[in-house]
Amino acid sequence: MARAALRFPSDILARRQANEPAGLVALFGSDEPLRLDSGLTLSPFQIGYQTYGTLNAERSNAILVCHALTADQHVASESPVTGKPGWWDIMVGPGLPIDTDRYFVICSNVLGGCMGTTGPASTNPATGAPYGLDLPLITIPDMVRAQAMLVERLGIDSLFCVIGGSMGGMQVLQWAAAYKDRVFAAMPIATAAKHSAQNIAFHEVGRQAIMADPEWRGGHYLAAGTRPSSGLAVARMAAHITYLSDAALHRKFGRRLQDRAAPTFSFDADFQVESYLRYQGEAFVERFDANSYLYVTRAMDYFDIAGDHGGSLAKAFAGTRTRFCVVSFTSDWLFPTADSRQVVHALNAAGASVSFAEIVTDKGHDAFLLDEPELFAITRGFLEAAARARGLAGRRAE
Image (cartoon, rainbow, N blue to C red; front, side):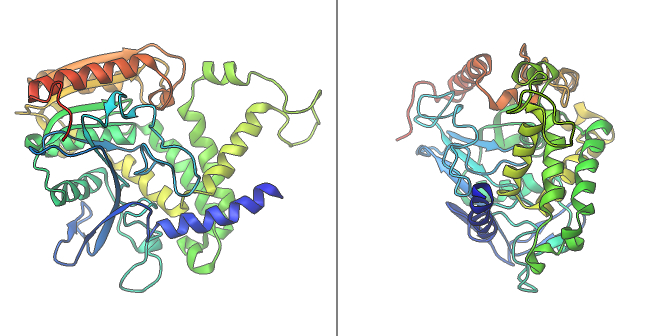
């Protein structure tokens, strides 16, 4: 009963965030349409975002943090829905690797999301009802074009660094390919230049779980006053497995039973790992929109930088002056090191300045979000070297 009682208010908060997010909002009117890869335009639209630290007088110390699949703009501040700390508050903050005493940090909710940037849960101005599936399909380049409009709105001509992991890393690579003159440094973490067939397959399982839920209502569940909670929870459970490694699951759970001395010989959650996954699914439903999950997973599926440049990844980065630091993790089977090496080889072929680190860890794909001291040291070192090259070394924003 306690869990159900908590779910209702957080659900209301989550729905409210789609149109009236906590924090900052940039509105783009009908005179500033966003042209999408689908050939359609989105207008008007809005972007929910947060900033941390102070922009210096030269406007040269801005870092854009790009979030992963189901995160949001609250990278280093409490979530208005869950009340939990920012999703990367171990990385972003005063004195941390992304030091807000030195850098002006921007993080925006992606296009198609559900935390204040226009997405399927947002109100369609043409109908007064939620967009649902009437929202055009979104791509990673569309997300980045929207971010570029936000950065321009903030009066920033050139970003000191763009950094992010997983889907955030895809955005980093897209920024570096599409806006070569506007990105001084780039740090893609645990990512790839295209989505693999295996990853597309995992996403399709999740989407089908959502759409098979009778409460999905063809995507119009918000208008019907319901939501496909069961389908979305299953989608999250399946995805969450891919974020971990076999070693991490074994270390954390093994085959230990959950609050019982012997199996129940039923389909209850006998094992701790089952209980953990069910909790992850239930918690996710309270904070995320099901249609947004369809949109952002599809955006990742379509991502293929080389495909947009005649099949040549090196050509996508030709002429770049951006400094790169590419990071992967040994136990990440969702975006294995081979994906990062492909990016590094392409950058080398393009004559780019690039460093590469493969971090040994058994924490899986989610290692970039966890307490990983080597990642902290690499990030701090890369940013300090880039700051010296840009003339920011030792300077604090004023």
